[in-house]
Structure formats: C-alpha cells, structure tokens
Amino acid sequence: MSRAATVRIAPSLLSADFGRLKDDLAMLEAGGADWLHFDVMDGSFVPPITFGTKVLETCRKLSSLPIDVHLMVNHPDTQLEDFAKAGASVITIHSEAASHLHRQVSRIRELGCKAGVTMNPGTPLDDIREVIADIDLLLIMSVNPGYGGQKFIPASLNKIARARTMLDAVHSSAALEVDGGVSRETITACWQAGADTFVAGNAVFSAKDPAAEIRALRALCSETV
Ligand code: DX5
Ligand code: ZN
Image 1 (tube, rainbow, N blue to C red):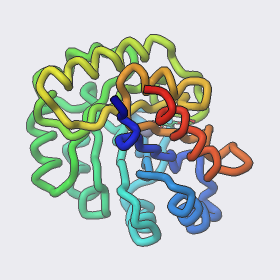
Image 2: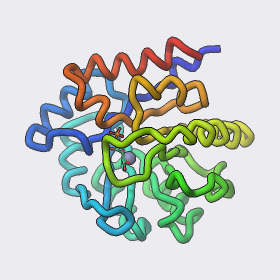
Image 3: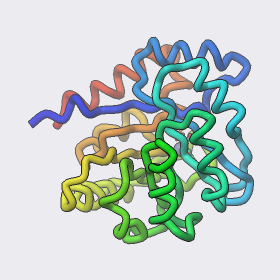
Image 4: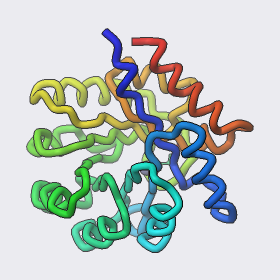
C-alpha cells in the first residue's frame, strides 16, 4: 500500500519574514508547498496576537495555494464569515473555544470552506467524536498552541493513531493534520501513525534552503509506509 499521494506539507506563515512576505509566498509555492498554514491568535485563547483577515486577504492575492486557517481564538463563531470572505480555504476551530461545535462546523461549510477541528494536547480526542463524520480536517496539536519552534510532544503519536482509527471507522476522507514541532526527526513517525498533512514552521523557515526542506519532509513520508 502506498499513501504517498496524500502527503501535504503546509508551511506555517508564523515563521515567515513579514518584511518579505511576497517573496516568501512565491518561494513556498515554487518550492512545492501544498497548503499555507495561517495561525490566527487573539491574545486571549493563547497569549500572543498574530494576524487576521487583512493579512489573509494579502496572502490570498499573492498565492494560489489553499490557505489553511488555524483559529486559536475564543468565540470563533464571530470570526468565521470574515475569514471565509478574506480567502480561507480551510477553517479549523478549537473544541475548547467552540461552545456549539456542530453548528460552527456546519457554518464553516455553508460559507464554502472546508471545516477543521482541533484540540489542545491536554484535551481528549473524545471532544470531537460527535462531529467526526461532519469534518474535512482533524488537526492534532503536537505542542501547546501559541508559539512556533516548540518541541514535539511524543504522546501526540498515540493520539494521531487513535484519530486515524476514529476517521477510518466512519470511512472519512478528512485530512489528518499534525501541528507543532514537525521536523525531519518527527515527521516519519507522524506519517506512520496515520497523519497525512504536516504543518511545519520552524523546520521550513529556519532551513538554509526551505524548498529542499519541503522536499525532504515529503520524502520522509513517501519513502516509508
Ligand atoms: C503553534 C502554531 C503552529 C506553529 C508551528 O501554536 O499553531 O502552527 O506555527 O510551528 P513549528 O512548526 O515551528 O512548531
Ligand atoms: Zn497552527
């Protein structure tokens, strides 16, 4: 069996150089990135504040890649329409922040975007069990959200494997994404546990040759099934 065709590498713009955003976006597209990962932090759900719809509009104009918006915000329901209008392809919300998860997943799809759900490392996978058949993406956080460049939490591998089982049980074709500390050292184990979509911030942007790093990360999945 080969799952090579399903590998997606999603560089996180959190680690991009915003002084040369246009160049970084062009480099990622030419370098073979599959998606752009767009980390929105509100200073409340997580301490930092990052960027919002205005920057997303700019990215949408400058790149033709799908944009994978990760909302680390409280009350995501108040933000969905604006992020959809600004050009999100996928919108992922945290179960801890969404008081009506099913309604919000449905709303994301109504707005024409793919719907993703995620939870912090300390939150059980069970939180999203009741919406598992209704989502297009399940994101496993392999660090506590808020910062790039953190160390991968090894227990995430078991959570990825359990998430794979949950998705397969309902014959879901949803993407299974991993976010946090993904690197050459950790990506193969994530792939083998069942993930197919990999956010990489520090690994890609701190590399001397980011395009080569994207290729190397992809190869580490494709070569091992
Ligand atoms: C963390 C963000 C991540 C982050 C990943 O809260 O959700 O997307 O940018 O960064 P790395 O790959 O550096 O761990
Ligand atoms: Zn993220």
